[in-house]
Image (cartoon, rainbow, N blue to C red; front, side):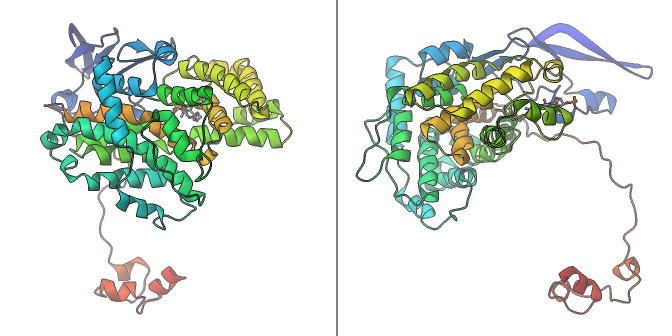
Length: 460
Ligand code: ACO
């Protein structure tokens, strides 16, 4: 909201005043929306680290204090009392559901669990077995929309009319697609969702049931998975959510927008880090468990300590704290003595006592312990980021809605500082390499490799 304060910018002898806005929680920002119009200048902000790209009512983070709240409710409270589906409702609709709202929402999610039978053909030779499940997930989420054309009109008002159905549908189908991607990759028969199972239990059923052998997860395993999903529910303007918002700002539908979010999440500096953490821990284990030597390499800049550091948190990521405890519990339940947990804990201990990590405020983030839990549950490493995507779906949906329902929303279109060539001449082909070739050779002739030695070298 607007304050009575202004911020003064002086360029040469000219002064410009800009409004100061304030968040509900007190932080202030200088509103430079009119900067270029008033001064002719733009700003540059590498990685947008100092730029609030929007206003939002969904999630609050105080990275210095390690606070994370969804719609005003601390993550620790939700982790202790809520479920993924209830928290998804809170994130998407802004309030905790009443009993009736919760029941309606859960039913809607449940009813949408199956895929259109025609979509099953994608899993029957539509992707190679080597395909990464994140690629499958992104493609399939975009494709789901094709089966519900009334929800993907790319006309704001019409898409919004069907928002409630589309939100429940995506929340449900992302889980089914994820499980089916796993089964396809492993040559396993498809297992359909069941009507009498809760969200996380249904996912485990689709992952691990065999045709003649029903899988019944231990309650603590189902709860641990549900907790991971809940903790990933939203995280304000992270890379994938910003991507969803950018795509949504063009007027694109919900399905395409979240599909783009999956692509952004896949990167190793974002959601892909949970996969990299386990690979890193395994590497340390295989080379004899020398944590000090590994830390020394990270300090030299040879590689990064995956699962450490965060753009916002300058203290312990509150989600990592909850997951550290959960990892210990899950490993007890499955009666697994995973040497990687010990390596992770030693790595954390050493890094937190080391000035390199202290000076840069590098603490474990959400990805540091989540992989150990997923591994103990039996989720393969290449599915880790997919699990993140299932958890992040409520956040992406809520952010899409926030953008789509703005009456005065503008398309996201940043400026740049151009650092390329100044204007220069077009040099004709014959003058570029001193050859005697014709300038009027047709494009088709060139692409077929006709004639010139230039084409011969391009083919070589
Ligand atoms: N290991 C070693 N050094 C690190 C690490 C790390 N994990 N993270 C940051 N640093 C160092 C950088 O080398 C840099 O050092 P310098 O000042 O001497 O050059 C300094 O800390 C600041 O790093 P930046 O890259 O500027 O920090 P930024 O905020 O841009 O990046 C990020 C945050 C991407 C999360 C980073 O910490 C990182 O790469 N971590 C490892 C990957 C990871 O765990 N990603 C998951 C993030 S959580 C999520 O997306 C769900």
